[in-house]
Image (cartoon, rainbow, N blue to C red; front, side, top):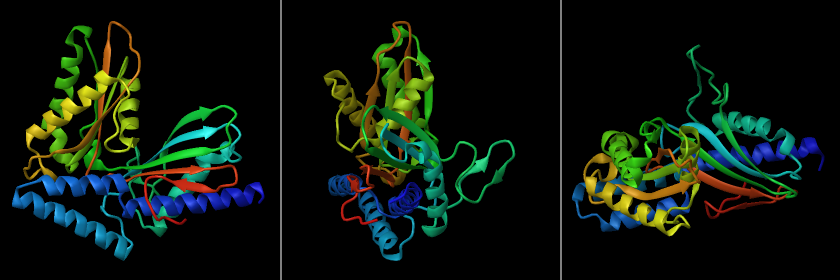
Length: 299
């Protein structure tokens, strides 16, 4: 297969994968929503969960997005330097987004800042966003896709705390965001928390945390304990599904961290809504693929 043919095939597969993730939630999200529904005692909460599952059933049956806000496309790319399409990857992903926009279809969500016009193709200056991790000497490419909707984006915030505020300050920051804007993000939420040195490093980690499988834990035992405590704390707020009240407000809390400057604690929050449209696909050098997020998918 020539390089041009490989590029066309990659674009076709990624467009199909993006379209699929708009309609069908990942396996871990469906499993968690099923678990939370079984734990709720409120009749209203159970009705809302039933509506969510009916939504999923119809989205697949009618081949339509599970939420009208299909978000801004974002990609986390972990690519080997020997992957054959590395030079053209960002351009190919942009082509895939345009193709998916008309074939899925996806709502047009890319508005050029300051000029204030919708491109009508879900691409624009800096969109879709692509974050890179380069792997030396490897020939595979691992891609996370994510649809960042308006509601789940609203709670996002980053700031730098004085060191004396400590991890209690981190906890207060997260809970303040959840009590102020969590309702807008269509609970139950997946909460990503970044702890690092500065606003940009913490913010990036908080979004990366949303790519982790639900239920996974930070390998640091203290961070993992904080994840559990934050889950308990946010659940205690009582947002419940769609903010209508209930015992469970989160699908999980994921913390990602790096070392930090001793004089600062950077902290950030990013949130995924109940319709957490995240996909994970791995390509080898011949474009054979493995999908870990969704079972039974053929592109």
